[in-house]
Image 1 (spheres, rainbow, N blue to C red):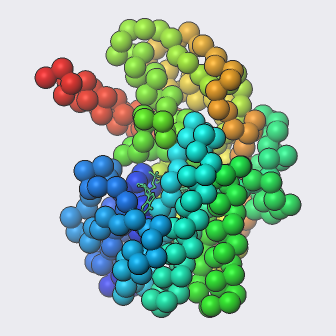
Image 2 (cartoon, helix red, strand yellow):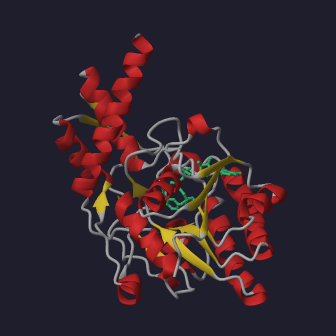
Length: 332
Ligand code: NAD
């Protein structure tokens, strides 16, 4: 239902998922892709010359209106976010993203956008359902009664509901995807916003390159998560945009691992075995989280296809190359 000639807006296009999404749309032959991000172009992970690239602050309504002019479909990915180390210490900043989502919805309504996809998160799920490492996977209905992740999760849940009410009150078609940890190349791996897979890869690579056989792990390493490779994420995101499903859908892997097992996989890729130092007072997030994919499998036939071992290998090698290039640039 999306024509190759339709104008598609991707916000947060300078980020990890947004960059891959723009690249994938261009690759599939979409001819009018507009890519918008707050960051200067040299900080974007991918800048596709075939796209119309704009640097705009989407917290501002006029920037959202300008970006939405002539647009048929919106993938709204822009958000001030990061891994646990960021969202536990920047709750107000995470919540300010409500301005992006509010203004983007208003602009989409006023510009006659045909469909608007909002990228929510597994952080909307109620904390009490995630207290055990041996967690029962989270179904979409587990978001209520609400007690999401403080800051970031509340903003996501609020914006989900705003999408729903823009549909009810203004006939703006919306789709909502709840991502569970996405990872892959061309994303953040240092600086404080990185998520666990990239952070673990970076630490193992640091040990590999320096010969120091030690790694710091946040928490006791027995907390559990699932991690979805970017290619699975892109396929699912596009399927949800094209679907008739108006309720939020989980998009995540259901391969549950402990952080210690994630480290095992990264060590095997790097060919090292490290002494583990557990930092028990570091930000850890919930004790256990997994994605229940029953609904998305039933309504869209989607299931993740890439194992953590395969996806992490690609991610590890990309981060390795960045770190080696960075070192040689510094020593030149
Ligand atoms: P990212 O941080 O790499 O990308 C987000 C981009 O939004 C950044 O490039 C940032 O500069 C941009 N942005 C922030 N404020 C902006 C503003 N005011 N105006 C314009 N652009 C702005 O994150 P990502 O991993 O690519 O995530 C994309 C979306 O998916 C986000 O909404 C995020 O909350 C959601 N999500 C991601 C994950 C994950 O595991 N990566 C999990 C759950 C939800």
